[in-house]
Length: 204
Image (tube, rainbow, N blue to C red; front, side, top):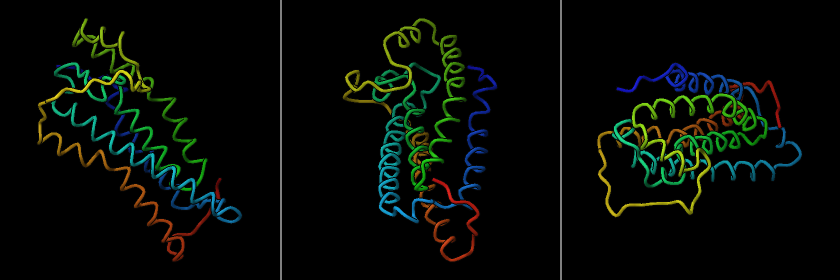
């Protein structure tokens, strides 16, 4: 059985802590663009919503292939033929999309910086363990597939693929949490309008 190193074990709780802290900051802030360039807020929000949509569909796509197989075998088809870590790639798109949904540039920039600092360690740690678990098969996969950024021309899709419906169903809910976060952002904005939550900061 694969033993997950500490950097990987902390990935989810640290991500959740970061999300809570960031949402706490967002709750008491508003976009400075609204004052003099309301059209800019509409554009930023639209781009964010598009990224969230792509990310949610991408995460569902990844879950279809990885559900029940995460450490049992080397998954090399579907999104995993485009790059070795498509789930993290789509997660980054979704996180940046949610950041843009705040109608600011500061929040998505913070998200990008934190991701760039922490996740390379997570990826290296995971790959080191998968090399131990799958040996030459995973090393071959590394040599033929990009690490993070997908390469569309590499796409391989089978005509049939066995899916574990129970595990996939559980993954569906986590794949859509970026959509729920946009809903929370809209709720916060409404609370600002109603005066329930005070605005302490204006950010770009």
